[in-house]
Image 1 (cartoon, rainbow, N blue to C red):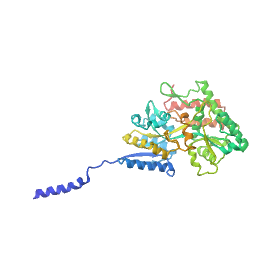
Image 2 (image 1 turned 135 degrees about the vertical axis):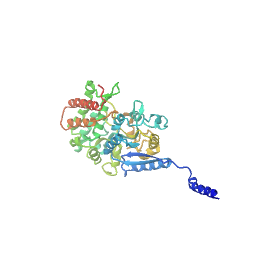
Image 3 (image 1 turned 60 degrees about the vertical axis):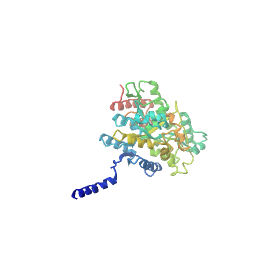
Image 4 (image 1 turned 30 degrees about the vertical axis):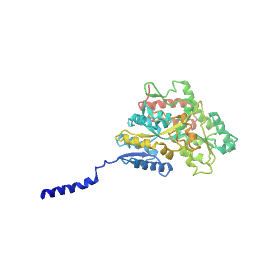
Length: 418
């Protein structure tokens, strides 16, 4: 009797465990650092997409943390150095070479070969995120630049079409200023966008800030190649010409991106090199933005525009497979059409006929910073603009100085080809 009773008690103790079934593994939690504005439509669409992903993948949870771009780089570097990095993060293309040199980016090549949607990405987007044959990041969105212009201001100056060349840009801008009293063109001289605009004009004039050499390192070769120095000088001279004929506001030498965007949205000048994000200014300034149209950038020797590939950085760690699953879900056609309809890296998502397709049509002529640790180079480029626009220095002397400054920065980061 006692034995039977003990057996019953043992069975009773096991019953809750049997009823509960086998123990389930805890879901994998992915940390995802983003720089979206939670109040904007794209952020709400992205959050809805992540919730959909979690429903379809109950073994994966996504923990997002919103960090402004101004703080994101330093926070990532600190976390990476301390071994506390997120699994995946938004980022800027200017950080790509730095993170690659740190050895923190996951090699996505094997995953990409098995991904059926890889061919939907623009080929030069994939090339720009590939180093030594290894895919080191995925694209999040594109920030291509086109020529935005106030059609009414051009019409008031008797101009029928936007400029197609540098000479036409200078002439058109000067004519608008003479007829309307407002500058024809706007630039930035300070902040992150200044070197982005600068590199556009360098690319249009067929010159690079740093070339990859046979040893795998980089070098600015303007000093060794007189034709390259002449072309770089021509870019700085273009800025000087625009200032001398009052085609640009003199105060724009001190403008950052906020000044450039706001003053164009208010109709304070006629044309600007800018991105599709300016669509968001229509609701704020419906009257002054109603006549805005989009055209390809005026070309120098060749057509080119800044190709801001904002990457999704996937970092080395134990969750690379799950992170890849999340990243490629975010890059699916349906999600991209909802989150980044006008600036998707997918060729099958072209977006709005005004604020989408005219920009993505420029992908083939997009140029980006080389995959180097940029170090002081963006600040040196900004300084070069200031020396021409604010101090009136000779473009040739400034171009020579900039070439030396770029190589000094490359040497400090151990990337200079001697």
